[in-house]
Length: 204
Image (tube, rainbow, N blue to C red):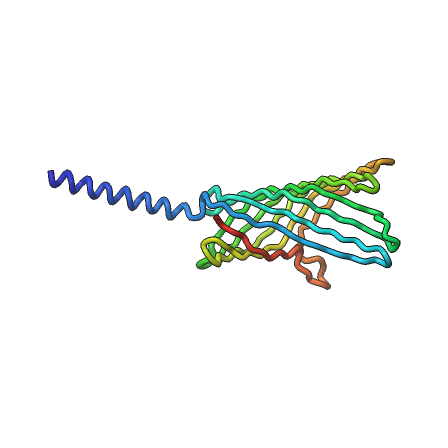
């Protein structure tokens, strides 16, 4: 009887340790996170002034210990007013941005990741009634540092972007533009990093 109890106890300890190992191996799997993009820009040319802003909240979850998927849904708006106060352009664009990331641990709470995103935008100018739609594929590496169990700080920049934009006026033919960029530096002379972003991500 004692032997049976001993074997059962050892089996229970083994199962508990195995379950603990699996739990630890899961890492952030099942963890949800929230982030987003927020921007405001004001530009003046002569007497004309253009104000634009973007609000794009993003929510995602870790589907494995090192892979997460996310979805951003937001809006971009812009308005141009001339020197007499007349609105010459007023655009409103709907944005949806699915993404996926793969993480690699560098050291401690520092992680390197690669991200692929597919932003889709559909907009219309209220003044001219011109419609604009675009879709793109973006690849961006970045670093993510875990500050606390509920917050991380991250930075990334785009190294590859390919997509197309279609403009459909109320009168005349539509125009489709294809764009391709695979260089994180704009040129040899200015050496500017492409689309550098810094932000925070909240875990829950």
